Image (cartoon, rainbow, N blue to C red; front, side, top):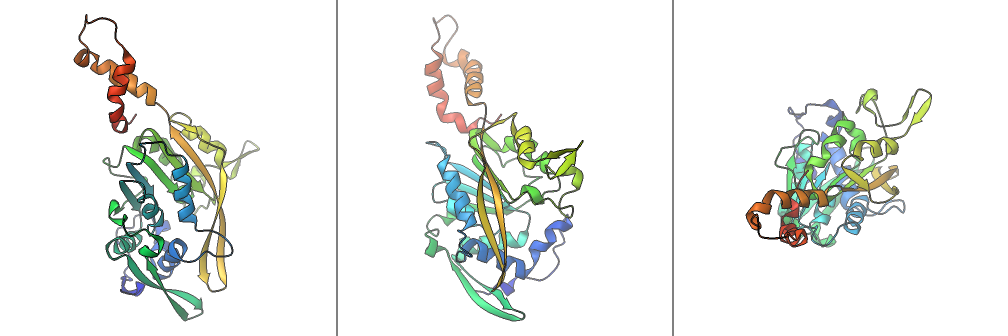
Length: 308
């Protein structure tokens, strides 16, 4: 088991946007390892685990084939989802986060150091078996990629998770407008964000909310509803989930993320399109009155292939 310091301190040359560079240092990586796998802090439960549990609450029978976790960091939510999903893909812009996640997947263990005070450090360790995540870790694939420029093959998922991500994207509106292309019909989208809009991450003209327009306050959730309305329906009202990030033994960051769950529209419409397309194949012309319900049952196994 190698300490976190085995990671190179070279500046990552493929980091196209400077607002991601903060995630490349040993110190920040150690903080995220602790946030994902360390003990609860200040009475706040594990955020990554709670996000996964929230996802499980909204999945229907047969909807646990594949999941995509955007902004997966060092992998806790992806590993949690793998306990129920057959296949999970974790994506993060930081190659060093992905290195850590892959090392955990491969070895099940990791050592890292946290700042106690000043130059004094304390040793800490991660063991996936302690969380009962080791048996299904091989179901997860981690890859380095930009959430706003994903490969075309990353599509057809029953679940897509983007937790504490959209307020760190250069163009969150564009991301939301295209996210339906990644999700299977009737699939679930979970978004979580503290709506901490800052110009060093997102140009102000691209903020979802947190500003005034014509004297009226523009709020992030209202804009989220507008952006997603065409392809999604809201499953429930937003809820708050707290999160913490340890900086030193006595210094913490504390935030509250607004969590929303959405279901992709169009399952019935998709089935009807498939039925009509293949009617001549499965039911010849002139054979009498067509019972579409029977064909719908026949097509049901192909639901996950339908992405509108």
